[in-house]
Length: 81
Length: 416
Image (cartoon, rainbow over all chains, first blue to last red):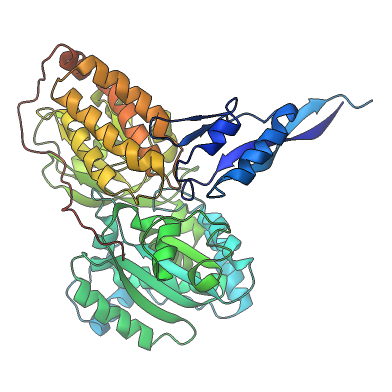
């Protein structure tokens, strides 16, 4: 058995650039909700594949370009034949 | 660290400094730099500014980047409960400057900046002293800078931002200062006390440094003790010393202790029973959910109300927000309001629930550690003082003093 690194895509926000517009939460409600003051609370887990397109739209449409997607590597034990 | 040179003119102070410590080693040639870096690595010295990051690794991180590097001594001491850096700069400024120049040599910097708070006592004497050293520093340009008195000014990116002509507010634009900092150059930022230790290690060696402290956490550190003790102030203790012993060194308690605030105003409350066994190490403090931080031990008198004190501290922290991140800008005042309600026993159960909710909402959602510290302060309050909470829920409070136990600096609007 070999350890193979899996990489996942995660949402991240630049809290200084973010102005609480909230478009991200509208476009990706499964993974982003707004706090009482209108600022995004991001799902810390990886974005599932079938939501990646919507996630990319949310990133592109943020008026402050504060939202981003980043790849994070998590080593996962995987059987390699 | 002995040799109190406070009040002496620069030349006399330097002579006294050299008599006490001997001459500092040169760091001009590559071999000398390597020896110094090795000594710092072997010593196990960790930063004394709060984060406790291994100093050797910080030096290497800056030295690794090409270009003309900059070394910065952070003596701003934004934490109101901490006086160690200003005491150090008043009593052993030459040691700090030695450390700064050595660090500059170690990373190959040709520029060294000592940054202090413009509210610092003894500033005229320090200016004179830095001028005197600067005139005698051949390879490294030494300058003194006087930063605004803000809580977050000492945060690495905020300090660099200010040195670059901006406000003393944190930034999160990559890359990190070690790669691109002051004037776009690889920048080393080290706490003043860390540099003083480095200056001593350069002279006396890693083994000397390791004679005191513990194996995992060697050396000594400066602590600031405040509150009802006979001689509050700054003392130097080996890591691993018990808090009980530190209180003895501060002359002992002059009133019963209700608890202790460690790690500064955005630190952690520790219940009296937990204080008893505590040793001054990163590990021990970590075990009670605290961080050594800037080495502050704020004794709370039993006659004071920890909730009221925390409400005041939170009001201060909210005021000190750089105002850049929504969760901090809105969350910290909301925390202060909830704490105020709880302190006044105004809908206490709701206030308590609100506190827990808000702490979760602000934690980790800003560009710097301020909201994280606020969350930690609140959560530790709720953990350390269950009896006081119980009483407040029932509409009562056992505090017998009204006047504030912890001082809060006067408001300022200056970010430059």
